[in-house]
Length: 276
Image (cartoon, rainbow, N blue to C red; front, side, top):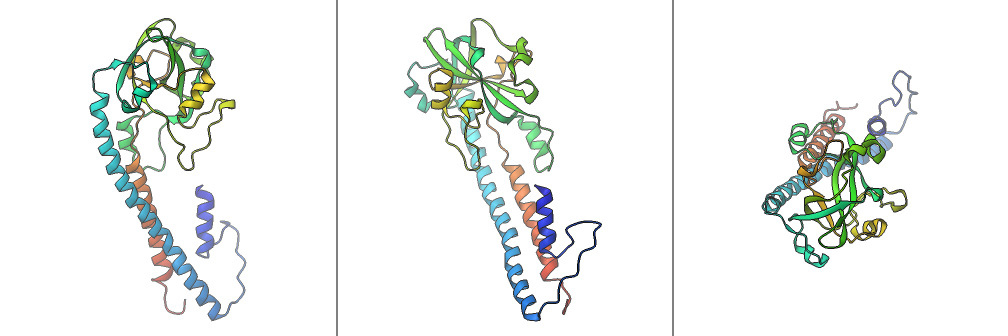
């Protein structure tokens, strides 16, 4: 967090770690020891802005890739919905393609992908680069849906609920009952990304889409769709877009860190007066 990081920088730059508390003077060191230590710090600290700059440049490339991907997927998402194929193998080439189903929900077997925030492209563009954000943490509500025309049960991401509404008892009004027609986009299984926690089926905490494991837990087929915004009902999850583009925020963060740490390096090693 910011506290440990700030303390580490103060330690490295020879500043007092405890504001308001007098620091004990360090023991005199030989000139050779100081020179060796400064040489080590000189190169060590230079690695930080270099690495941050590299990560910022990587995020620029990732953003270009994501924008191209979004542009490509928009044509699929805007296509006319087709009936959901009965064979899961047919779905491999249909990711992000709208499909339509008819059936009913089984709210007794909800799954929760969390933590998540509601995807709002306008807000994300407005808040890109901010240290703090107005986003509210919550979960995606994944509900088994029995397709009456196909005779199979699939998983439907009904959308986002804030953390205080994850418990279904707090949103009974939004628990759709009876036969409904539903449109959603096909989503395939995910592999766990670095630093993403493992799923915890026992606690019903899911951090990424593992369709086989989720289907086994809920007793469904490994078929998953994101319900569209029109599926949203008062008091229920908010359906719609789930593909986010946060790379601009990462770009500003990494380039900002690179600039700040390079400035600190410059102040520490290049602006010192002789003999300091």
